[in-house]
Length: 111
Ligand SMILES: [Zn+2]
Image 1 (cartoon, rainbow, N blue to C red):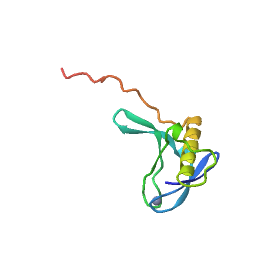
Image 2 (tube, rainbow, N blue to C red):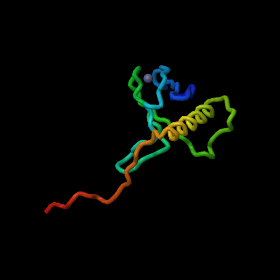
Image 3 (cartoon, rainbow, N blue to C red):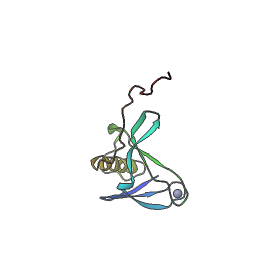
Image 4 (cartoon, rainbow, N blue to C red):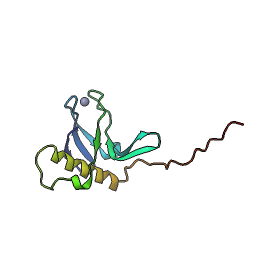
């Protein structure tokens, strides 16, 4: 899970299962996850499946008031600050799940 370093268009991440370090392009990432039918969580960034071990990891952006001070060195504060920065970069790049509003059922009842 740890985010190691952010770059302009990608991010270095270490798989928490197999410790493999990989570089993930922003183009492969998206903010938002459907967690139930019609229910979306836009604080989550789903990472691609690890090619080393098949693990699927998710990053969760915490609330702004939980953001640590800018100069933090220790984990998990540094990780949390990097997740915030990555989430913001993806939103700026419009890499956000397109959520359809849950409207009324449009299916017609059987005749
Ligand atoms: Zn892995």
